[in-house]
Image (cartoon, rainbow, N blue to C red; front, side, top):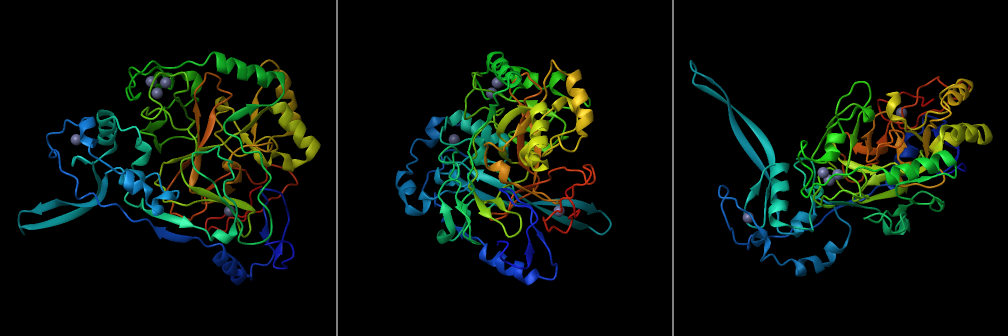
Length: 478
Ligand SMILES: [Zn+2]
Ligand SMILES: [Zn+2]
Ligand SMILES: [Zn+2]
Ligand SMILES: [Zn+2]
Ligand SMILES: [Zn+2]
């Protein structure tokens, strides 16, 4: 799509542009374009492990490295269909595990007069390990990986979500792939760039992992302090125990939490329920725990979900997952340059309100919660006064414009499938990690969205219309 098409009116244009439909009576045009933009869904063949000997039954489970000893999957891994990128949940199926859906039947109520029994059914996922033992919940997986010392798998490769189809992959037509890997090898997966709509080339973007400082002395000082005074834990295990792991204990420290002082329920690497204002302390490179088995590392990991950057019909570039994702899954961190709030305001004054398009709010202690951008929303004159008050404690903003990761391309939706959460692995509450997690099951091929959290009418004279097209659309972003 481009401005050459009279059905569309381009009101803003840049990497992350917001384009609105000038004429709502053209749904057919959109439908046709959506067809061009469709991904094909394929299913990988699931390996058969029925020849493996059952080493022990369900009840006598003393698993050891012997349990996976005669598992030879070399031939399997050489098969061409498994040379593609696949779901992290497909990997155990290549390492001798069988994933099955079970139906459990319960007696719901027994009425003594009528002798009528009502049965209820509950479906569940069970993994059968290579030695025959069955793993019915994540805690079993944690124990199994530990006792067998499998180093090719981690709990990120397992999900008990009934919706997730590990063998399913979404594919875009090869002829529309304009770049094999947008991350240039920096992520654990390749991120292809796809444009099925027009001749526009891939975004010119400096792909970077993690935060990096601007040239401002306040930022450089904070980075130096952070690197030198980072606390860590001495766990030799997987950091599961709240009473032993120093990093887990740090999560309860007040300085990292907001006034509600609630601990984020961050269990076995997924978000179950939390307030947007909470932060959790996670392990860092100085911790002694295992990089693969530690259960307190996730948001500083690289992306391991196959996804692609693609040209959307009406929202510029966007990103979609190529595999099924369960609810509560860590997708990626929002990375970029750390600048002072002072510079963030200067940039808006110098380059106009669009300068904040890639800003992300960082300050934990304000209790506002993460949102895409905040600087322009506040009154600039008030802000300058506050900054003078806080001269000795510079406040920071994350700016992904000079470079960052795929997160900068996630579009806004009023009905999103991701949410942002704070994590930290240092003691500077001004530098938490902003991490994106799924809020629902996301099917392979679907676009990934989060709610930018702007408030309509908070910036005088500025109107940004929403083009998320969801039934819950609020109509305006600003
Ligand atoms: Zn075993
Ligand atoms: Zn620990
Ligand atoms: Zn640690
Ligand atoms: Zn750890
Ligand atoms: Zn909307």
